Image 1: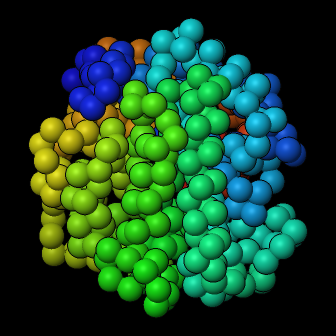
Image 2 (image 1 turned 120 degrees about the vertical axis):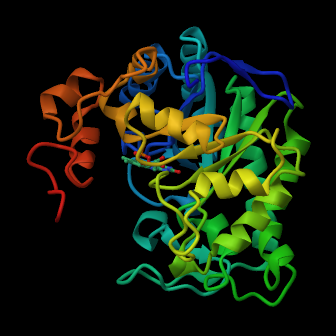
Length: 367
Ligand SMILES: Cc1cc2nc3c(=O)[nH]c(=O)nc-3n(C[C@H](O)[C@H](O)[C@H](O)COP(=O)(O)O)c2cc1C
């Protein structure tokens, strides 16, 4: 049941239920990457609403990894006081805290970072933006070090752990994909080569944080444009399950669907990952979960923890709602007044207009 308590097998951390607020970019951070009061308020409200785990928005580990304005950063010690305030607040409300750490790679626009973006290879994915240049071997090592330093900074601030963002086409995913990673050195080539950047980030984080620090890895099962295929991701999951990490988080977008690349296989993505990794290896699955029935479904498919994004934005008390097995919270669209009443600042409400059908008067469902 999604309302049941659960314990991380590796380090014994307990969480009060199976719910995870997935990472949600909200554009509210200050220009120097520090957390704003609005962003902290938004996250604390979800902890107050009962989430077992609260994850921050994607936050860049190097200044040249910033993907958009208003993005949270964990690249400097000046960001620690805000992180401490967040960590203390989330703990007081009974949630386990995770900071999602990432680097935008080719998706960090030159006009934001003030220099040419970097990637696994020369990549020109962002049409109209300056193409990314290939990272030198030294820069790859620097980036690994930056991920580890960011994790260490989070631990110093009292955050319980990090989620390494290997999903959605950012730098780590750019190393994983055959289209975006055409390197001929040890950071590219076969699966081992393409997985190496992520694996080394995990090792480096482990070296610089205490054994009880939680490390979750988030991946996308498939991204056609990057050359990330389901079979490679299943193999990655197997190898990750042998690493010193606490959970794998798959970003499915729609947990009711199977693989797009292998339409003849009707199993859901959650089921396929569950079958690929050991039974006792913790799995988080996210995408289009709205009702209590949906939450039970994804657990029956093999997820230990249930991740949500949009329903947690609109309904911060969603975890408490799950106590009713028939819980089915109101669907979108939501008025700006409603979103304001659930601790979204005007900046975040404005940002949510771009999500199809979410805000009354925003981008339409079919637009
Ligand atoms: C406004 C918004 C911001 C998001 N920001 C992030 C992010 O920073 N990092 C990330 O990994 N996923 C991000 N996502 C994806 C969500 O974590 C989640 O996987 C996705 O919304 C699907 O879950 P849902 O159907 O419950 O919303 C974002 C989604 C939304 C709607």
